[in-house]
Image (tube, rainbow, N blue to C red; front, side, top):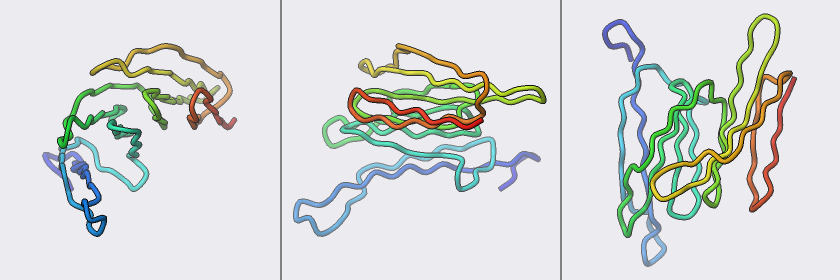
Length: 149
């Protein structure tokens, strides 16, 4: 979709809950956001752990965090992250990876954030100067980072 000569898309986020009789999925929340860039099939991702869901919107280099309070979902944190390529979220730990290449070299980084109430606190960061893409997997207190050169 184009608007004022620029590509535009909408991001839709739906939350569903299994019914008490465990037969149907009921929609419990819906969020919609206008984006200033068109989205392809791999331009966003979602991860959920407990009462928190994180949506990554890669063309806009940001994450949007939603939190369940009682029976309601609400948007709680927006974070802009330059050159974001992927993220992983589990048990209050968010690992965001980024990568930038020019004609001479590539640089990748991974930033570690810890959830604190309604904010993310950056607790660590690492960089690799010969990789162009990072990916992360979290399992408890273990984080696996994969990158390619």
